[in-house]
Length: 118
Image (tube, rainbow, N blue to C red; front, side, top):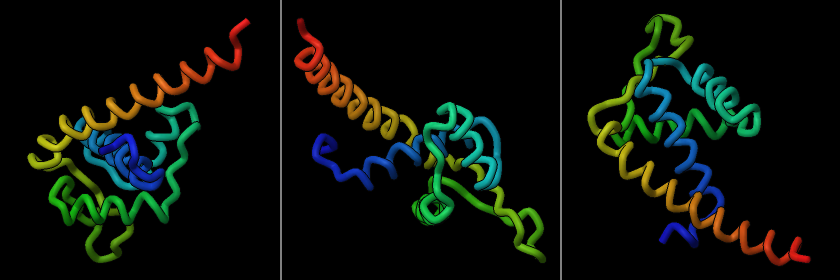
């Protein structure tokens, strides 16, 4: 199933896992989530706001996160928290993403073995 997922689906699953893991620790806004992802990945993954915020809205609609405006009058920052449904989903999402990583590592190992064998 996941082994043939398109790159956009893979990035969405990976980013959702980052979001849920970050929110499991503390409630925060989208900019901080993006900053944490960049920090954790040593600036390898830099979530585009045009991708991150729609994903947060989708996760909110799915019931995995809950958002509240920091100041409802100005609607400047939306603070997200993980929900009980998000905590439940976190385990299965982690397993799904881990399986994909293992598959990618297996494929990379086969390519390396061929290319760099003496």
